[in-house]
Length: 267
Image (cartoon, rainbow, N blue to C red):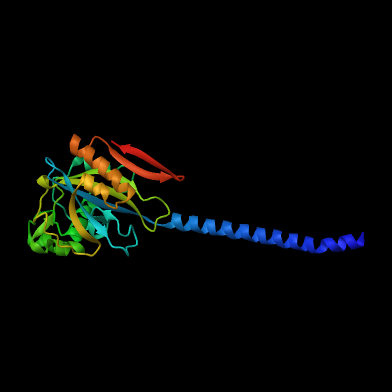
């Protein structure tokens, strides 16, 4: 009996070591999962604005897209619409109108923001910085130009001020969890025939290197490019708005909760 017990001792020791290893592994895995979840949840969701510029609306509509750099942190090498985060300077910018009242109202739905104009300001600034296209009208006074701050000083240096005429809010989406950056992006639609253009549509003079290979492409051609999934949904909404008129009857708002994609409509 004693000899039998002695034979089982090594097996018992191995079993105990296995249990300890398994327990440690489970704790390690749980710790990593909690850490990843914490880091994902800690990523700040920044307000952002993007613009779908359209030309030749009545014939063969084309939209302006550019390609992000292959080393970009967010969506490298993807073709996207001009846009980016709302910056502090956008809150101080004074923009000309008229601003669409329906868009203004919808921009303040499902958000803590209490002013819609910074979204328009960011949209106009990002278009200018990434493409060189300036949506602007002559500034009223030298004092008005001096009041500009940040990136707006250069924008207004030519005696122009930003103008939101012809821009309509038509789509919204929040970047899903797990991405390196997250944005609550408001998309605006603007047709060249209605926009206050201070220059030509083909005179790309990029102020930054965020977008390259700028081009006007038909909607069908754009779908063939390497675009993010959400951009396909943006194109769907743009086509609907171009067919049914501005402002659209409702705004699709895409987001994710509990790992599932959701959509609600802002009326």
